Picture 1 (tube, rainbow, N blue to C red):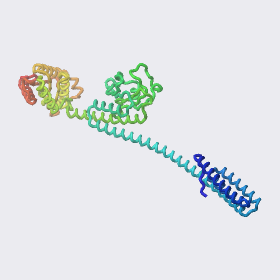
Picture 2: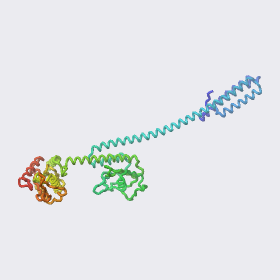
Picture 3: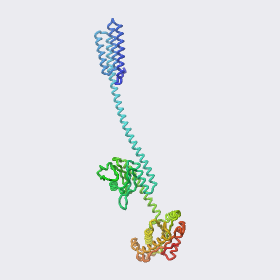
Picture 4: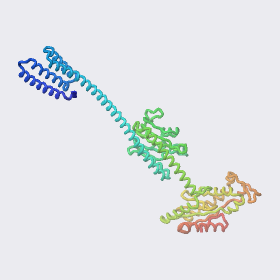
Length: 500
């Protein structure tokens, strides 16, 4: 017997089925009574069948307790009828009702246990679904976090590629500040401080701020930046008002509640601080701090590369002994200045100078003393020539000076100042020669001279001057004329300036 358990959602249907069963049973009962008026057993037997049918129907309609109660009542009624009549058919009906009662109870109990198992399975499935949903949620969060990290690392790659093409320190600093402010977000300002080696303090190098934030007035950092520079470690402050390490000063230029900052380490030496701050508390996380630290590593590498490039460029353009510009870059600079002078019609002059008797001096006193003379002349040129001028080492003992915006008379005066300074300086530079630890020797190595004996002979220079546009309007022609006038000065007795 496949029983269908009643549910709380079927009370009206159960009552309807019961009413139909009772109505059908009543009609059947009445028809049997009318057809069997003379035989009582004939009336009892149909009644017993109706009761058995109703009892069987009760298993389909009512709950287990109600079904058992109705079936027990029917069984008792049939037992009473069988006991009163001792009719075999009633006994058979009684037995059938007993079997029906036992079967119904067993069946309903089986259904109940099955429902319990199904309910338990359903609860287990629901619990498993809940665990799966939580796992899916965690996996989604991890996926979002990994996606965010992937996006950030992709952005880091883009920044690294952008930095690799820059050699200017200012452009590198501005790029780092702008991209850091954009990628980390949540900030009011982003500040990059570099260490001023002369003053030994932080100096604002680049910055980025929101439009609503006032201009940055603290150009040398504050307690947070100095803390990072002193400890050489990154800093994360969630609430500046509650951080015992710092004292929040009133009346500051802007409110600072949270910040992150990392030191710029170049070769394990702190050279600056990169910092982000916000007026909101708990604005930053450890991931933001780690990302900022990675950006600082990229910046430190870019700074190192920029300095190496600048140093390499300087070595390629300057003379290792005197520190002056070499001949080739000087000629390129001269060509640019001549083109500019042609466009603007401004004057321009060059001075070419040579040390008198320099070869004989080297042969007599040694090349070390000759190097001292070349260095001293280079220092004199740097001291006398104006900042806008360009000084180069043209050859072994030849120097050249480019003087933009100066006419021939003005260039002639500067050339004369150079000649006079060399003549006077080389006569009083005994101390400089002693610092060079010079011991002059002849080429035979037998005769030695003291520095005082060297100075007694003196060192002089001869100079030639040529100007644009009076003398020539091409760079090579200017050099040719200056060289001719230099040799004219030598033929005229040396230690003089020739401009015609």
